[in-house]
Structures are given as structure tokens and as C-alpha cells.
Length: 210
Image (tube, rainbow, N blue to C red; front, side, top):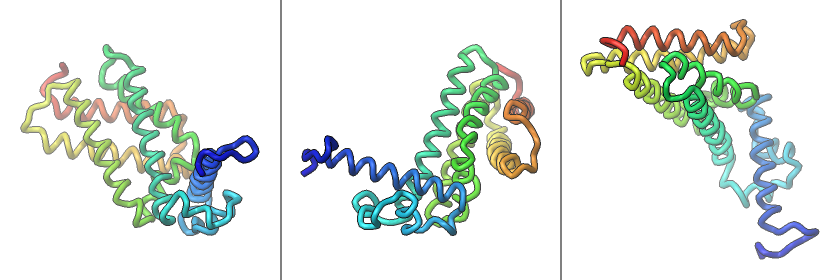
């Protein structure tokens, strides 16, 4: 059946298109109206699909929302990696962090994605644990890069972990304030402030730069 074609479009293609429409509808609802407005029925209405098509792709609403969040988290991680690569192998910690921050802010330029990742995820039981895991992952990345650029003794492990957690959590909270209009700054200024804070804290924890 999957190979049969209707109107020049295969059944598999139509199924993939319906799945993509559901994901886009969920992102739009969750990222504009919030979790309370993102029901299975509302998603189907926004996607222009009969609810019976929902279950050909997802076992339930939580499965759909989880995929929406995971896609955003992956996009953020990939963007940060591209930012690090763009800084080049000879860049210092500050330049590397700034480049990664600018790349992440390019993802946050879609306010729907930023709201899902930062505001709506903690309100959802299905997404809360995933957001916490993402924050821990990003904290480990900060720790690894600090060690790459600085000679940090093992006696400073706890301090490094503590400060990296503060950086990542503080970055998230400042992004929320920025999105809400409480923090007035250009994206480049945000990236500068984050890079400055990262460099200062890593320097404090280090014996000396490599």
C-alpha cells in the first residue's frame, strides 16, 4: 500500500506530509499560545487534519510534544557546534563561546522555539525531565571547553561544575528576560556578556591558560 500513488503523490509521502503538518502545528500552538492551548484536537485543527490521522504518526499528545522539543534541542546543540567550528581552532575561549552563543541566538530568532525550550518545557511533565537533561548536557559542554582552554586542577572540579551550572542556567534565565522584553540588548551584546562571564569564571577556576 505504501507504494501506491494518488495524484502523483505516494502514500508514504502523504503520511510524511501529515506528520510534518502535525509537528509544525504543535510548535506553533505551544510556542505562541502555550501548553494550556495545545490539545490533541487543537493541533489537528491547526494542521487541518482529521484526528484519526494523528495516531498514524504519534501514540499521543506527549509523544508529539516530546518530538517537537527534541528537534529544538538538537537544533540548538547543532547550532552551538557550528558556532564553535566557525570560531576556528586558534580562537580563545571567549571568541569560541561568543561564536557559539551567536549561533544559538539565531535559533532563538524564532520566538516559538525559544518559548518551547525555555518557558513551556518546564510546565509539561513530559518535557520537564528532557529540559533538565539538556541543561546538564550543555553544562558538561561548558566544563569540557573550559578544560580545553585552561589548566584547571582537579581540586577545582566542584567549583568548575558549580560555575558552569550557574552560567548555563543564568544564560537561560537571561534569554527568557530578553524574550519578555525585560532585558534590552542586541543579540551581539548578549553573546558578548555571556562570553565575558564564561571567560571570567574559567579564569578564576584555572591556574593559568593553556
